[in-house]
Image (cartoon, rainbow over all chains, first blue to last red; front, side, top):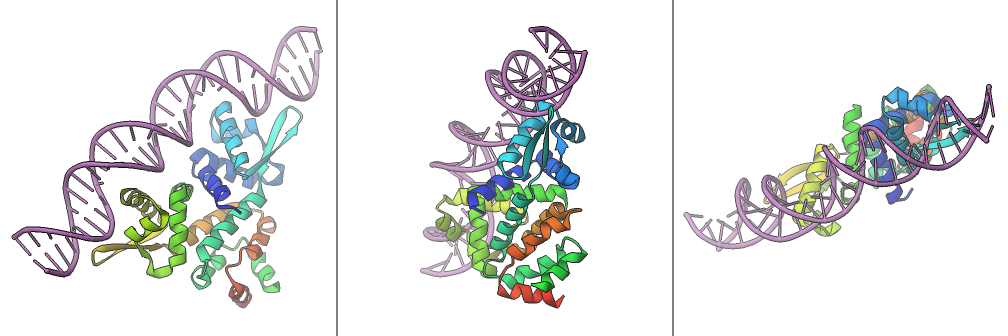
Amino acid sequence: MEERQARTAFAALSQETRLRIVRLLVQAGPDGMAAGAIAEAVAVSPSNVSFHLKDLEHAGMIVPRREARSIIYSADFTGLRDLIAFLMKDCCAGHPEICAPALADAQCGPSAARKKARA
Amino acid sequence: MEERQARTAFAALSQETRLRIVRLLVQAGPDGMAAGAIAEAVAVSPSNVSFHLKDLEHAGMIVPRREARSIIYSADFTGLRDLIAFLMKDCCAGHPEICAPALADAQCGPSAARKKARA
DNA sequence: CCTACAATTCAACAATCATTGAAACGAGGA
DNA sequence: TCCTCGTTTCAATGATTGTTGAATTGTAGG
């Protein structure tokens, strides 16, 4: 991931409403949520949520799809993953021994350790 | 890590000069660099670098120490680690199978895999 | 074709943030 | 003590960003 792209993603996540939207959509999973439902969930006006959704989409954090009259947004797990990778690469650059413990603390779930061991 | 703190960190990293400073200090390691040296390295005025350093310090991304007449800044690896953990927790929440592959891609170095396997 | 609905776009305004240069501060060395 | 160097603080300015409400676009049903 390029530095410029990473900065755009960081900027997107630094805003309260946008971060709440991302967390909401991560929880919602691949099914996603309609723009209107998101607006209601985070309690902001439709035009405002649209503004932020566009920003998040541009930052590669969410992805839209049309479904009947609604537009459904869902988290872009690839984008989120790439951002984590960028951060880890910078954090650990030349100092794996300092950052490595973070991996243990930040494990996603009980299966993660096994997946690592396989490698 | 709290959401508010994470947002402050994201905001800090979203600015070009600040991100360059963080990457510079990560590379510099625990020894860190003096404010003046940082200013020269990223090619901005002393007052401007001071402004950004204060912001990064407030965001928990760097830590200062006095040394003779200079003030030495170094990367706050704990803060960076916490931010990664926050991102992974949000990204993976309820979906470890989607995010887990990121760990393999983002390994710090060749020794990381062994350290994981040990766990 | 007309109406209703979901979402976006637009223009305007308020608020926040980045940059600059001058001035002030604090720690050493002569 | 006085002077110098490294850094920070301050006030002013310009640039970005967030918010609001009205107008617009696109989709579906009567």
